[in-house]
Image (cartoon, rainbow, N blue to C red; front, top):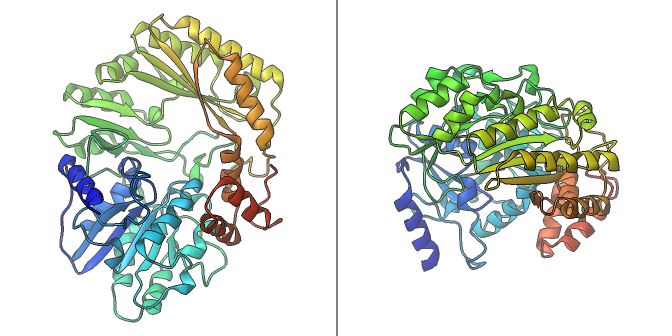
Length: 488
């Protein structure tokens, strides 16, 4: 395992802000995707920081090994180099549905039984949490001793007290399961409503920045949480009825270390923050680069774009989502073609090298006329840009998600989605660089988004059978109407 040990040491040497602690109450925090992805997760970093701040508690990180490492490579924690399974509690942060296979692979490398009933007294307690739990935690159920549903910040201290108290493994799990927002899937059929922390707990902010992250050398801080917009397809739409929770500018700025070379402002609707220009200006004036996780085309201004360019931005990224004006109206997107044209004009004016546009195909009610309108829009945006600027278009396939008005909408189907993507690729050749998701990937995401515990077990069966597309389709096909129905 020399290669793994060397890789961990090389990455640690590049990190700023790593926490090396001692404590009787030891957590292993597992991210079921590779290091570069995990270190770009603000939620993962926040839990790491908060746990390490608790008395007599230490939390250490481990990640899904990269594909170039041997299958026998174990999961070692970065901070101490110990086997991650040696900690009494192992916690997974799961961001989205397709990380389920990564969870299985990490459990295998931990040497821990995948299904919770098969675990013994000596095994670590397996906790799961992360953004996916706010959408649908059910497919995770068979593999977790307990699941923290929703925003975990406020429950971490009592959860730690429960899990490291007196009693047997089962008694400690039961004690933790009595806490608000904590689900015991083996004992309780349905998960509780997602936790939502009070505004005083905000903002979340990172601990570590590193050039080895997918967001290289970027310190992440939350400018707002939730979204006040009502996009019909989005799981973030007016979450829990509270809309967007803005963090005051001074609290955002207080979290940022002077030494951080780049700052990433995170949130579902960052560009809706009323003090965004002031926050960005303060960061840029401090000599730091700045990036935003979400730009809304109707919120851009010359002042903001000028600051972003000064702060090192080389791309303006906005979302059309619906590919026509009609579909955007149907989706309650509130972005019009004129906003996208203005974005291209600003990119040209300030010499931004790349304009990136996100859109979806397979939206209910979509017609060939909508596709033609989108191609025309892309051609017009390309015309507005300069000869040395690039237009990049990212196209995904619409997936109906729980907790949205379109939860019961029909999935377009794998073949139709693939044909639509291929058609767009031909029509946009010479106009834009196109990147796409896939129809099969969207279908699987939808099955898991609508799935239950039986869906999770079927996915594990597919993993054991090799994890390929054929194994997945066979395993999910055996469910029949169970675990969510999504046509192919």
